Image (cartoon, rainbow, N blue to C red; front, side):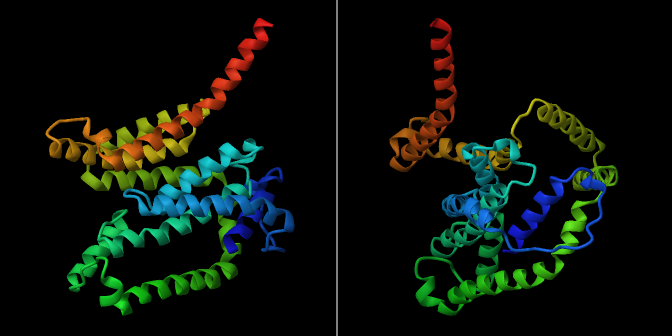
Length: 292
């Protein structure tokens, strides 16, 4: 619940003029109000369901679930202009999806031995090193491990609650860091991180170029979440596409002849159509009004 209180504080800070240079003297309330609970109920349910579904899929997990939930809440909201300005729905939905995605990613890892993200892949490696083979029989063969993982989730969330509530004032004060001081620090640490990968100045220049591109996209009011999702899932999609083409000997019809693949593609087509349908309907109404 501490993150929701933080979101409420951030919303109040952002609604006050000149808060970027303001000092937070005292935090008077952490619990959300009744109106906040009412506004959070639907985003929490949607975020939990979306995060649970994406957490199981390969390439999913907490990060993908958070961005997807934020995009969903902004799309269904009646006041999308409030997102990015402290809207409580933009906190509740992604946080619920984040938690759900982090928990459900254990399901394919423990029961099938299939990692849904790099973190789960590391955990599978650690289990194999210890002589534990993940699979459907792990619950009966390794009950201590299975229930230990379940209990650790509860203990971890309890510790986060205990640590975050007393330190919420520190996190809020970090949000008041002036932009003129934060911006150069972000640039310096980003350049250091990029350069340390291959010790190449070209990578730093490439990062600067994409920074300019990002600035242009922001001015064009492009959504950052789909771009980030594509950045995360793009390499995986290319790798598994090549693998599927090798297994099918170059036959692209394998994607529609296999039931699972065909169902997933059909769902993707429906989602894409549902995204464009409102725009097409509005355009059609505008044409009819012009003709009348």
